[in-house]
Length: 203
Image 1: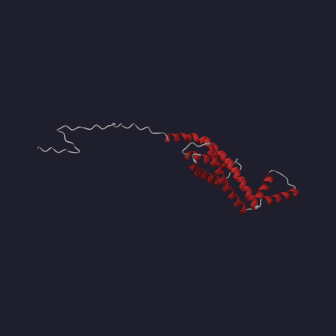
Image 2: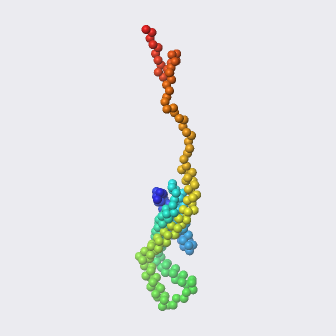
Image 3: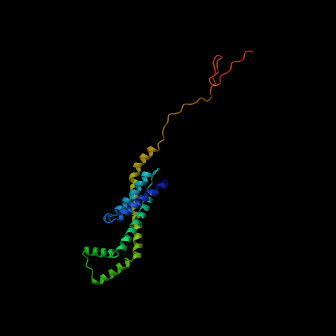
């Protein structure tokens, strides 16, 4: 894993965005085949490919996708639990409304068992555990798939720019210095500019 220093930024940003969009009513798109989970994982893979200094592998994309899905699943579970505690009868009413929309006629004898099951299933502790487990599992798997798809699509494009930045620069060769410095011998009438010689005193 050569790009591990870029993992945190990738799955943290993508996970927060994924959890927020999955929790907002009217924006969560619950019936659109887990669209936000796929896009959230794809966002994690895209950020990793864009930030990484080395080529990104499919395994790295799956890893950041899993962690982004876990973060998004925790945020979604927390918001769903708060909504449930605010209105405990919401789940039971939604379930009964779904049965009525399908045109199913429930006999009074069966309605008693259904109400008992809903009362047991919507227990606060059990409901939170089931919601948290299912959300983490589903979000992590789908986000990992979305991240792997993003790495497959975006990594070749970012690899081209990454290769241009890391290409060596060919500088012109430096002038070769002579191995030995040849000393310049002064002629009798020439003065040394650095160390002027004194005229010999006439004897």
